[in-house]
Image (cartoon, rainbow, N blue to C red):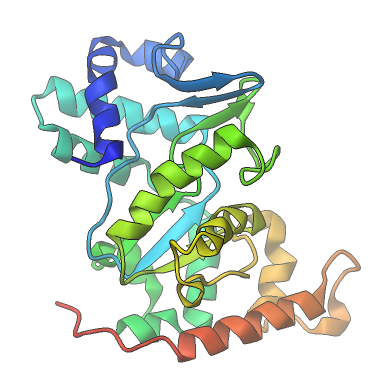
Length: 268
């Protein structure tokens, strides 16, 4: 049993006994789900530990937010009260709460642009959210919700220089890296990349499997994404966009993907 799987054993009773309104009003269940509390930082349990074995690509955010935690806790409560075993309940909760929404279109366009669909033998990485969900694993640099003074953590203080956060990263994310030896890792934004870079420095993740440098797929990054995809000319960019950096990251990513070792035949 993995380190992460043990966390559900610890908290299942509290989740099963909670009402939906309890979960909606407080994802920590009055502190009963706290994994760590070093004010102003807290780390709370939510059921995100399912690992998609055999995944070829891992999409990495910073940390689950409160809304994702609510969704996952509500789903695992339904699963547990219906009598599902823990492995099935964890998978259902992760699937229910995984990355989705308006950012998906931007992310798919960028992943396709750098050649990852072709590398995986797909027409488009959009298939990762439909018929080929077996090929993708969604996770976060810190796999459980982190709050700063009760608000969603957005990357400050640094996860690599703050002992509490660095310990969580090395404990949980390193286990996922070990479980997915054939996957490439795609951080969403520089903060998530900092966490993965720490694993590279520790020798836990090969640098050639870290595909860093995509603009964050948020709608707030629309101009950077358009330039990355070649849909907007440099001369039309606003002053806030740094095209040289985007050019550098795009060229490096295209080169990295072009030199990835061929995958074994993927089961259809």
